[in-house]
Image 1: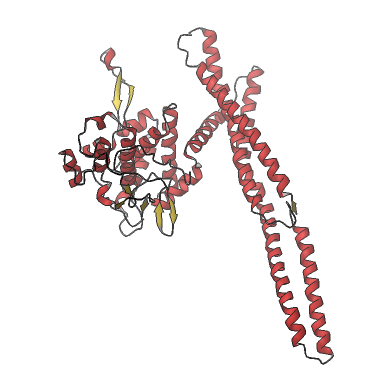
Image 2: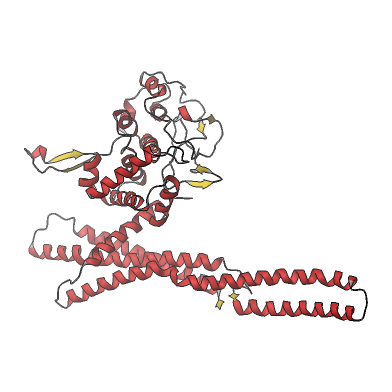
Length: 473
């Protein structure tokens, strides 16, 4: 088998550049179509007919097309990575035949060395000198032969795996084919036909949108939650769905708000008392009131379970599963090298809330400044060692039960206006270098230690940015 590495990688690069342009065009089309539905001033029958066509067929079709381009772009990346890892048998080429020819030539050379040794031995002469000269050459040739055999195995393994690199594209193409059938049926006057593909296209489109925001695929996100916290794959998939629905419900919100909301929702399943709400904030939303008593009562504020089910639209069964799994993980980690998932989330949410600067921050009084006071009340300083250098945030997997709480003496004293370790705003920032929880998805396990990012957080005032959930982003 012959793989033209350079030509193939160039072709993939060119195609992916075209796909990126197509993806941008798809995004613009979807945005334009969605924008056409936002005009509430149009009420004619023609408008509603067009609206129904856009909602039922055109937007789902555009999403199905987007998913094909996104899947092909991603699968091309996998293929390119695999190709780039192949050892070359000649410049820009990985060829099993070339490798085998070199193996034959080297084996023939070694056979020649062996014949020379045998000929000398047959004459009854001392073979020590010729063996000393030939043996290193034979050993060097054998090492190259072994390497070439490995190259052949690599190329064969690539050939066996290559068809699987495009499985996501094939699945997306099947959805697009079903969409094309609906379009053809509609244009011929036969109605939409089977529209089951539309839900698939919408779900896959949502997954791609979340993956783009997080910088990590759904599969990798699930894998990280399973590895870090021993959560079940199905439950991690529900967590992903919650993030996707947050992105859908808040299309114009910045990344930090979505991150904070997700962390808060996950953590408050366990840590939901008033001190934590004051420290990490609370995620709420307005939903229609089914029994309004006045115009002012048309909407009601929801949080907790109602936020999940009524505002995000998560099923009651999925919500119950999510709550049970997070609470079970919180209770049953005794003896395990697992961190408390809910606690990591709620403490990280508190820090996100500090950085986002809600109105509550401006009402707090502290010698260290409001941001520092809020951060300290979240408990960061009580479980952290501080220094004056930029360090790596670390949380070992053995640090399990919460040591960072909103009810520590630091919390109480800061509420009284006399924090345990006041840091005036004019002082040099103190960098926290250890024991800091981080958003799930951003951890990378190295030598038994869970690390977050090379960016550090500080307890004194000043702008800092929390890293996103992605790994290595």
